Image (cartoon, rainbow, N blue to C red):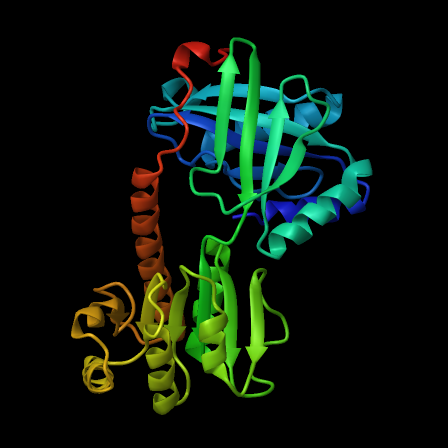
Amino acid sequence: MTEWLPALATRLARGEACVLVTVAHTVGSAPREAGATMLVGGGPGVGSVGGGQLEWLASDAARGLLDSAGPPRLVRLALGPSLGQCCGGIVWLVLERIPPDSAADWRLRADAVARGQGLRRQLAVDDAASRWSVVAQPAHATAHLLADGARWTLTHLVGGIDFPVTLFGAGHVGEAVVRALAPLGARISWVDTRDDIFPAELPAGVQAITTDSPEAEVRAAPPGSYFLVMTHSHPLDFALCEAIFARRDFAWLGLIGSASKRSNFTRQLVIRGLDPDRLADLSCPIGIPGIEGKHPAVIALAVAAQLQQVREARQAIEHAAHPPPAAPPLSSLPRP
């Protein structure tokens, strides 16, 4: 989640200095993962590194760096009784002060990430500012800390399209699902055949597409896409499912509707030549089991949870196949 990045660009453009607080490394139980980032400045904070006393101390340290205009800092916090937290793990945070004269560079970075570009941020103990470069799709945890005594380097991967969603249907349920998925980092292509159906303001990372040929958007979606089919037309829903099954590289296919709708669609798909073994790739009804409410927001909650489960399971398989870099030994990490 990179909501802090456009917020940072906006504040810098207003002439405000800010501090980025990034979880660089964790050991044991911790409330946030490596790569979680929080923006601290004159206004309300954006993002989170874990809440509670941890976040209060991180914010206090960031405000101190903001006032002193000093170099980057690495802060170690043990999440035990002395901190008023019960997680029991250890968190290392990297703090970087961002001056307002770098506003143009940060706007370019924010715009690149908004387009789905992956970026690498690198920052060392003696750097005046972080260094940025373009990277391919991140495959692992989004931050890695290398340390040797008092010397350290943070590598932080930001952005990239690892959660591409194509959602067909801009009705009440479709809109609720879009608004539930957008904060999870999904990059959503929201497709409908009707004019003037989309809301005036869209969440970040959402592109509204009005088209007479929605099946073409199936073909245009990137590999590993998550498809959601919930249009106003059953024949169109079927045509979209058939087009999606013509691909073999999608991550997930969800179809709104009942068990009887699934039975009807799968029977027709097999008649049209679909291998019956692939029917397990169709999720219908959609949403995690046990949530029975029919309000659009309730359906959206269940669907977002289901997609996140699928996404995390795929990430676990990817991490097992391509393990991330080894964590630095505890003895090498700076202590207070």
